[in-house]
Length: 191
Image (tube, rainbow, N blue to C red; front, top):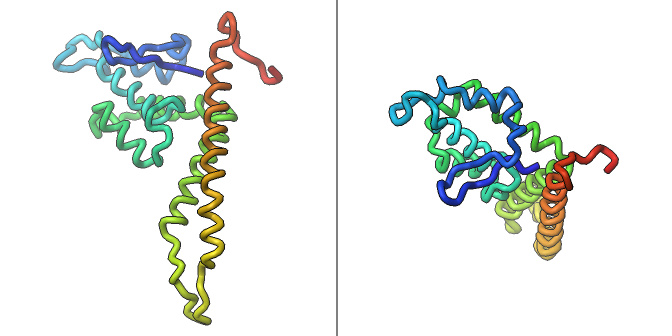
């Protein structure tokens, strides 16, 4: 489901589906008291909430431009772009809202599958970055990694990339289609 859109004129997030504000964890972020600041003494502009929702979108959402980044890099980029402080990041209400947002994303099986594939690819990349065909077993002197096996894995990388790109495209199209069913009706389990 698509939760946010970006207002091109202001650069701020708008709620595509205002029903998300019925969820207590998100509603709590919009409380005027917690949004008070020097620039907004009444907390009406919701500047802090805007930063928090920006972080959640950039870090957790499948439509984030950082979606393909490794998790640690994605989190840092979202932190930098949202301009949250360390103190705000450690706020219990914000942490609960992030958990809830992640939970909502993980309920979409196709997205869980895609995230799992991305994590596996990260592990494959790590393996290929650290394989040393010159490394030898200290007991018998034989190579730990066979060159032909490494070459075969490199050759298979092209097919892996194509497969994951195709999967990503299908998942994103499918999830977008589900969120825009005629009349705003949510699809059921067997639809």
